[in-house]
Amino acid sequence: MGGGRSVGVSKEEAAKRIKELRQQIRYHEKKYYVDNEPQISDYEFDCLVKELEQLESLYPELITPDSPTQRVGEQPVEGFPSVTHSIPMLSLDNCYNREEFLEFVQRLEKLLPGEKIEFVTELKIDGLGIAIIYRGGHFAQAITRGDGFRGDDVSANVKTIRSLPLSIPLQDEVEVRGEIHLPFSSFEKINQERE
Image (cartoon, rainbow, N blue to C red; front, top):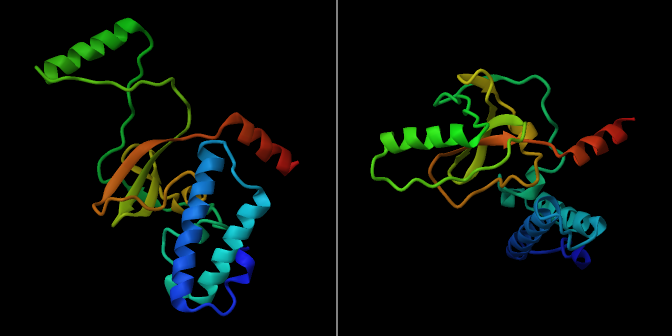
């Protein structure tokens, strides 16, 4: 836990250590939750988080919205307020065979004559359609697809997803759309914990 560094440290020392801890925690969260390659034990990770919590409690003015402590322990909300999408979040069409895909390409080529068209494709994964909004480089809101025009504000729940960055290197308002899904292994683990 940093050898008791949090006791009696100056604000400047705390700010430096907080920055180091946040970087280490984000690195280890990515290795654990995204890469599935943990580099340290759960205990060692918990010690890093605990030290960060202690420093931030000593100097609350150093807490930032993207700090890992602002994600840990976040209680998911059960009743969700409804929010209107700034741009409708409509369904995507599926392609079930090569013929349908080639027809889609031909439609695009007519719409964009002379343009180079590139694709990224993936197998369909059923999940929850979501719009994640960043403002000033920080996570601001997460809205479900809903009916395409209005969705539920699930920001508190989405902040608990450790692989989701709470800050990005862009200051403009950015909206990222995709799907949130739960791997079957995680689903089984949740069910076992509930028994």
